[in-house]
Length: 264
Image (cartoon, rainbow, N blue to C red; front, side, top):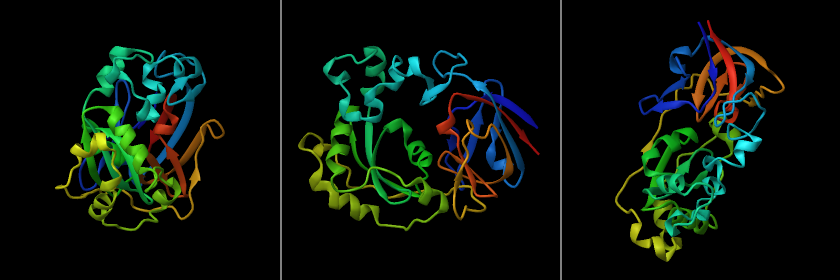
């Protein structure tokens, strides 16, 4: 069956295993149902997620001009500690920034390839953990805005990693750890402004991904270099499709690419 549309990050539903959906304008694919089937992926054109024009994608699904103009790509997205909406200060669009920044945020620990600290909006739990391919995660603090979450993450980065080794995550070269112990060990390093928001009564969340076969050594598919690819789908983890020949495709990393997908 042939599907066509612009790539956005896959939507997910928590389950055992997690369910993955690629949503297009007029259709969607449940990739769990495509496991063990042959997929052909073909790049057709670009479609910026902001302006919709056929312009080369620069970052995060946006063409270069939109990346530097849209509030959805402000520096505070990647660096929450730069958030200023709580001070009533605008970066690019104060109304948008207030809507996103001035809501409950979670600082968490996740184990994808190693234990790491991260930040997400409370409404994005556990979606954020799924997107990172974490097989276990736990909340540390719940704060009322993005700025407090950002300064907490910065403080904790001196004591725990803040990046995921995506190759280890995809080969499943991970170990279970006690995240409750990690959370308690990091408590004293939480900034004074966020200490009152510390969570000390929760347990780990465990996540199961739909993977039939992990790659031994990953080979990343780049649509700019390889505009057409065909392979048997063997798993989905994080925002990656995993194929039988060890090829992996980062769907989120290819947002803004308009593609055709044929499933047999």
